[in-house]
Amino acid sequence: EPEVTQTPSHQVTQMGQEVILRCVPISNHLYFYWYRQILGQKVEFLVSFYNNEISEKSEIFDDQFSVERPDGSNFTLKIRSTKLEDSAMYFCASRDDGTYEQYFGPGTRLTVT
Amino acid sequence: DQQVKQNSPSLSVQEGRISILNCDYTNSMFDYFLWYKKYPAEGPTFLISISSIKDKNEDGRFTVFLNKSAKHLSLHIVPSQPGDSAVYFCAAGGETSYDKVIFGPGTSLSVIP
Image (spheres, rainbow over the protein chains, first blue to last red):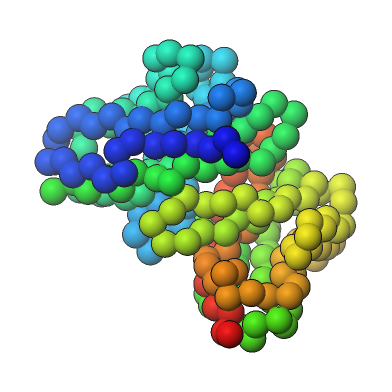
């Protein structure tokens, strides 16, 4: 069964460093998303992406964040200058056209020290 | 901002019995609702969805009921199995666009053998 994959599974970085989290959505899906879950808190929407542009973003998704689909299969989330409060699980999701079910990857645990 | 609420942080059920997980929402503009199951250190797994124009959707052991007038939905699992032990998230979307999904805080279900 097709699934969303994410790499790395765990990323440790120092405050102020840039990180790139990578995702491979399900191959025929057209809509892509990033969510995060800070330990003990809710899963929070960050951004949605369709047709090579951001379609919606939350207040969390400020200028430190960017997304890109560099090729036909990858979808990335970049955090330019990480802060301690960026430590969280980051989930990628994708959705097929004509449905609203989003399918999630296993997540990347980001630890900022 | 608690647009999607799951007021029971945890629930314990005997194997073979029915599990009922509840969810309330505040925004009548939501167009669809989703239930996800999540194991520790994994991404949310899509279970079942329901459109706001329906009041029931069934898929195997899982049934979701929607009461729009009460802004309430519930997930029924019958019969409950030990493998169902996980955190269950209610999520709602379609408020502003098809893209942004708002998650509830989750209910931890324990199915006791």
